[in-house]
Length: 308
Image 1: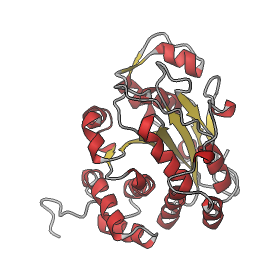
Image 2 (image 1 turned 90 degrees about the vertical axis):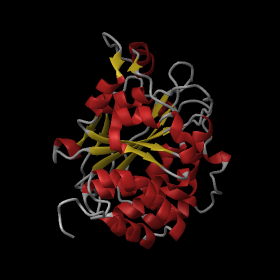
Image 3 (image 1 turned 135 degrees about the vertical axis):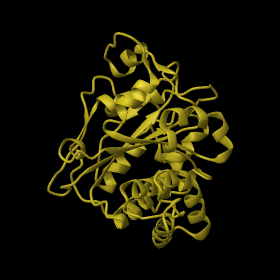
């Protein structure tokens, strides 16, 4: 998948009739779309093409329980073009974006929904709006580890195969992952049998062979319930945002910092400001990304022992 060229203007035109934070009629699915079922899927593919010769696979795995549904609605109404615009400004020429949705395999009817890697605005939007926003929630865990397992074992990306470059996976959520992946969930949802349950740290270790995984917490009020456990799993790749509306800018900023296409947070602030973020939003984005940038010594702070 992933043929065709992205057009920012076409994307804006497509969303122009949608109201913030995403009209209910945009997400019309009342059950898992048959083409988004992970059951029996061999692999989701991100491939190079004439249109996209240096593809980079990027996954948005969106928690759709309860209030977390605000993020896919925001992406579908206003925000996804901002993600693509910032990546283009960074020189990431051929992003291929896949949307997935996460629920709870213990009781949800659609605990995992998986689209395709796409390069055009029309096809990205097709899969994003095909998500069933099941809602629910209120429990202590969601099946993030099931989604991580799927992408660790059921993706094929030319960025990895041809260029030894990892893709990116952005998980949005406000709950901990289950401490282990139950084999019963894998069989019921993905359709394959495991000999035993798999500890979640082992799932993460497998995922990091092909992806840079990030966990995005939507606001500071929800960090207390999940940040500690996720930092034990992903370290500095846990990002606490101040508003769920910053998801796209923060994700694009994380890629820019990790790829080294911006030298520090001052450069990132200028870049996102040039691409349309106002002063308040730019400040929120920089604050959210400061711990991650500091871990890479790209926050702009002086390095001890090195003269400025």
